[in-house]
Amino acid sequence: MNTMILIMLLIAFVAPAAVMVYRSERRTDHISRVPFGFGADSDRIHDELVVLNLRRRDCS
Image (cartoon, helix red, strand yellow):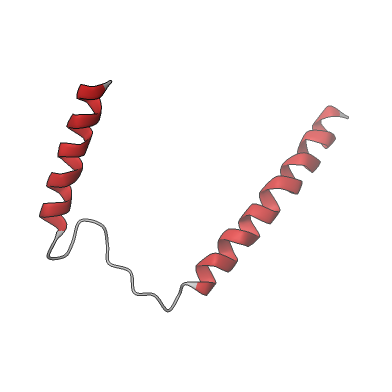
């Protein structure tokens, strides 16, 4: 009985989430996506993220 309730709750939450992800993916198909880590600014962005991480660690 508990297993059936757990399965029903899982379906009730996972199915709508999967549908929303699928629909949002379909809506953004026309947007070109550049793989992370490639492009003209990838080195600069990486360096900025490293600095931000270091600052965050220093402040905590």
